[in-house]
Length: 247
Image (cartoon, rainbow, N blue to C red; front, side, top):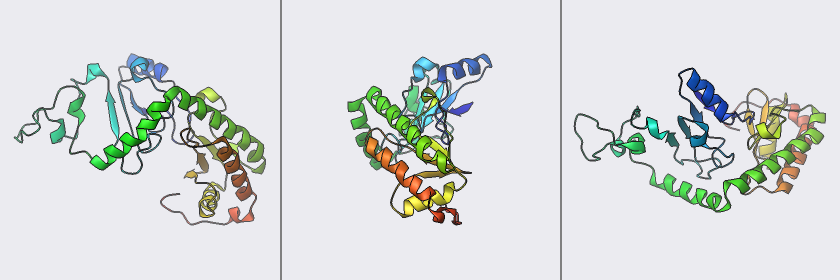
């Protein structure tokens, strides 16, 4: 089964160890989606008993648009599984262009075609400062930023009709916080159009805010909530806004 370690909408964090134990007891493998965890929330794939994991590198790993995805396969499974996407980089003899496909051994068999060199260079540069800081420090600041965000939203946005749609327990929250409001979509558009806060809209009524430890300051969190409160109090936020493909 495939699950998100951090829910993309609410930011809720699942218990990787308990999930793996339950899945294995039922004869299933676990594949984790770490798109909202890698580079933000500490994850021990080997220690948690994970079988597979995948994720993007354009979010918290700072690779930006076009950055490559990645894959984790538990060592014991690497010789048993085959990638459904075959390419010359995953073949044992890379230049053997015959009728049969012979995958390489180990994790290399999950390579596919020619990778994007520009994307690899970007993510390599993006990950380097994270490695220098370390996950422990990054997670400590992330937790503090999200805690401040939750406290300020409770004080400023809840009285304006919003509710926090993320877990209340800090230990169950990832790196972003979800705020639900019936006018979430026009609020997000007004925030973006006015250059105040770049937030995500997630249907049906969620404004998603992600303070990133590597470059978000505590004052940025404070100011963002004040600007959101200003938009919520603005009658313009009650006007209909046509749907768009992206926020």
